[in-house]
Image 1: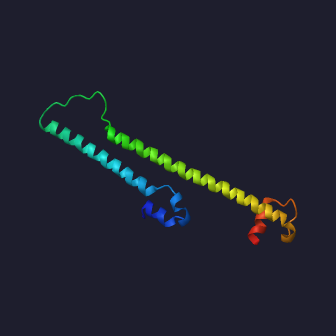
Image 2: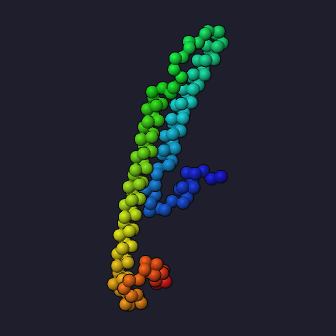
Image 3: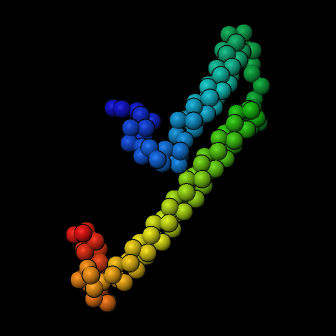
Length: 136
């Protein structure tokens, strides 16, 4: 199976490439966080192995083991970046949709005003206008 990032790149519309969610950049940041978490887990495992091999009773924890502050800050920054990307793409999409709606209204208006030449009569339905547009 082809990697998701590769599929996105292959299917991207060149003119919109910079408008997509920056998947590759976000994926790399997430991998960095996973790496930091893995390092922390390995430190915890090493501590536990040492404590068990020395037959030392480990102190009882009052709270469950949580990621350290650095990892938590990285996760928080990552989530903020994901949110920012989604907002950026959403704003672009909304602007494109509004622009397209405006262009459709303009084209419909032109078709209606040029109706006599195109065989249209006032009051044609949207479906009829679309059919005539596709036939043209």
